[in-house]
Length: 421
Image (cartoon, rainbow, N blue to C red; front, side, top):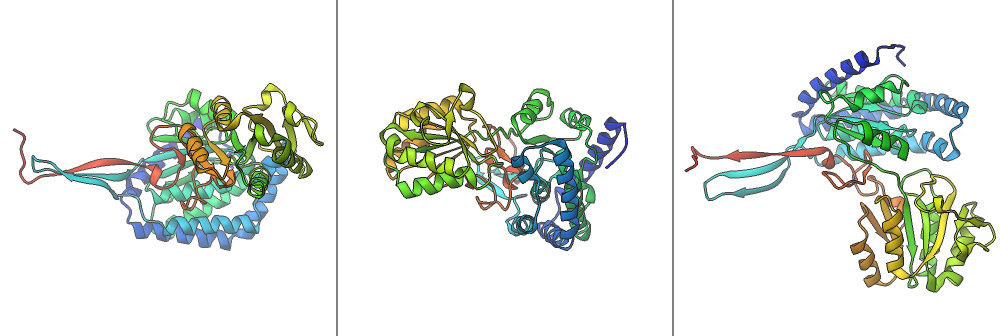
């Protein structure tokens, strides 16, 4: 960790080196980038014990800082999670290279041939909290898409993220690519974030990945374009035509598998028609699983439930909590979600295809799920290898942001001495 107090100078140096690396990486051969990612994966495996030791220091720091159990879970790296990082790096390495891919092509009566092809964005700045695996995901995806990246992770994950960045840099060096293509901001000083947000000469796009406070700060203060990754106020609606077994298993998984991820269910909506049967069974099962159910009057008397307040609707708990209420059929669910959703991920459980299609048609979240856990809201589960975040805006990228979403495009126009009349 750097001890410098001249944060503007530090960030200017990082930005200039990133810009120079981006210019070289933009035309790096696909096989070279693949080799860099494969070498990085091997380095993570080789240094996994060091990474776990660094992560233990991060957990100690986080404990002293008093972060929540859910945030501690996001921070933790064990053998399985390190293997997941390795698997993600290899999966990204094996994907088709998006850079230079022809998106569409056509001929004009004038004799021109026009191609729209994918091109890197340039330098991507990623600001994130807690999860050190984002270091590997973001670094790998930016490398694959020909972008340099400046990573500013959470203060509690600095030791883990530093080692993971070193592994990525080793991969770059072994492949003959500039190591400055992936840089981690080496300080916990929050002034570095402010410098990134106004670095229009050095950063082409900012990707914030974290809670409402972080994303709100970035959106308010950034002079650089932003891929918004808003909080995951995730709803799951149990319809009157839901299969009881599927509903029970899906809701419990959506809430309890990992509570600290953005795809975790935060609000259960139950069709009035099944509130006294399936609805109560699911609420009871959640309570028995240790979930604090913030319930409306319909479920308030279920053992383990407590009264919900207005603040519980539209709240991202990222913990063993869920809000629960009834709605008047699918249209009631749609109305509730439109009011409280963050447009991240919302799900429906029903065997009625027409009802599912109505839900899909009328909810405008980035990800909609039918008869499956909302915890699948993840770039890795979408076949992207990993994700840099889940964009909830509507410009450029939306949903899981993988390598392809980290490209823009340019037009290649070819003639044969063609002139305009």
